[in-house]
Image (cartoon, rainbow, N blue to C red; front, side, top):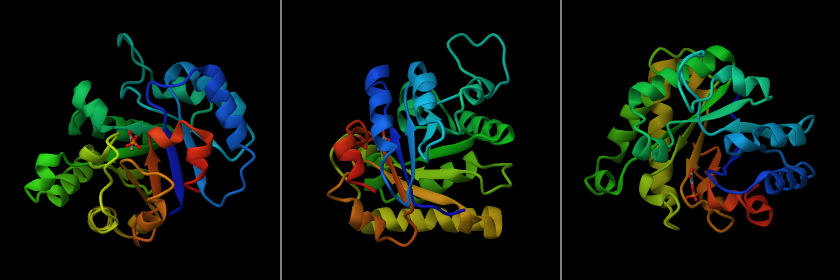
Length: 240
Ligand code: PEP
């Protein structure tokens, strides 16, 4: 179902106490939006227990696409599910940039997550150079198409995150973000038919309490994937 969603990507920040406290406070918020927090692996257990029986969902920031085996340092879908995790960020631009994620690994992870019942939050986005060359829609739609190759479900979330807007304080203009996201919805419709209308598409990139309303006015933007503003209770709740 297409839903209003705000997902916090904590990246490599906070500690267990901070994470649990943040979730305990988020649990008491009354909102129509679905709130997801994505802590580092070491906090997943504690944060998931804190969020249990509440409306706050917990996601991981990554997972491997194999079931199990000799993959030192990696975490499997079953390991996440064992902790009560429901969502997983896949292909964040920082993973693509620093950890050699490719469209191919993003696709394998997406397929595997879906096969296990985890909801992937698939990240796509263009670099500044690609945006300035006028290629943003093409780059992003190619990434979407590669990521969902072989997928036949609406149980996924797409996050459009222009790389140049992540953690920089620069936000895509609502019009630009809206246009790319409408293009993503068209691509989803071409590939998945009517299921596209049930998929939430988020914007990510320096989203905060000051720019959220304008972004959310765009017809195809269903919410946000938020980095820095999700680390503080006061800043995060300004979004929903
Ligand atoms: C992110 O990393 O997904 C992100 C959007 O970060 P920020 O909100 O800090 O730009």
